[in-house]
Length: 457
Image (tube, rainbow, N blue to C red; front, top):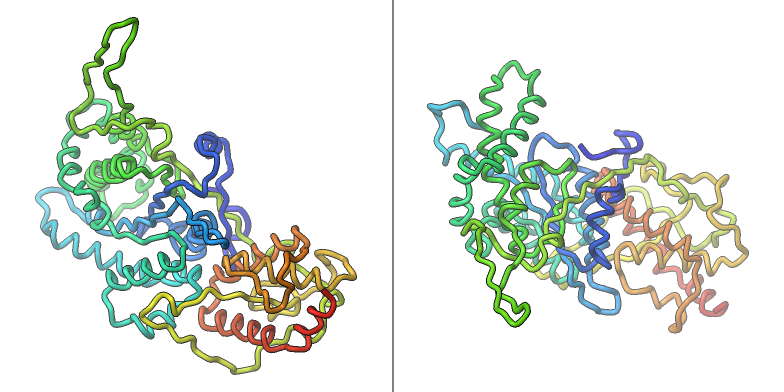
């Protein structure tokens, strides 16, 4: 299980990929921004695949892979693979099984749809939308249709993330038939079988206190789950060129052995000392030859950092212009209009005052000053730039001069992180969006402050 630092019942969570094992995998790439990542999501049994933890991983993926503000396209992407249909193995009983494979798969698919609906906000937040707005327009669509809408929105906004359900994933590159051919090898190839047995033993041990279901049932479920999951994840992701597999948990022994067996280095005839040397291939016919297996399907395990109040985000009200920010009016709520077209869903630039309502998780204390400066202009521009960076929104030039504007880089970074944490929080989505929207309007409608910035520039 991944590390979780800080209070479990916190509002905020962020994610890092530190640690020795992760460092070894990451050092193979000059930049993670251009890598392809497959994020595995369990629909049951791992709380780190849902809620604020899922939101932290989605936000990380967007921050890492979205297109640059200057229009430069990112070469990287992140695919969030929802392991729903394959979950049918965890619903099986010992032979002779009373329920058919089709019945159990349909049940697993329904569980997958419940998971997606429960975590819709986690996928929508980086797009500047909440589930209430989304469902107002797309609530009558099937879950698969909703996923298509979200993926298209993300594509049009240059976020470079996508959501994929299990059956869609294994159908890519016509891989499903080959995966079916690979499955029997996990019973006949000693190295693969031993790895499956090791992981199945571990799975059974985790359920040893479950007296309602026998250990034989858990082993039956685990062995069948793993023999389908291994080639579908490690081989197919490698074949499709994915550099990293991200999951909040340790890599399985069977995953490591699957990579070694089914993703092998190219070996072609070559010339040595005037002779043509051929290396007869002894690999399994189902294995895939690649130029460099070490650059494919490397495992990354996230570390989550929880906090009730983001550290370092307190700003003294004495350093802020008193007229610039105002609190939202009580009861004020105007719904955003979400249309069918992605172009009608703009990224939002936000500005947040030091005197926030305590429900946002941001302190209004004046004891801790992030920067003490007489230059209010620098503080305000730093806040705006940091928040815009969190959403990769173009700079708010209506408040600034056209030439590059000086900012406090440390403050920009802090406000960038604070904005992401607020948008990823478990607060009520409608209240969160309405609050941020009211702050935006308070900022944009204050002509006096806009004029003062231009005069002092």
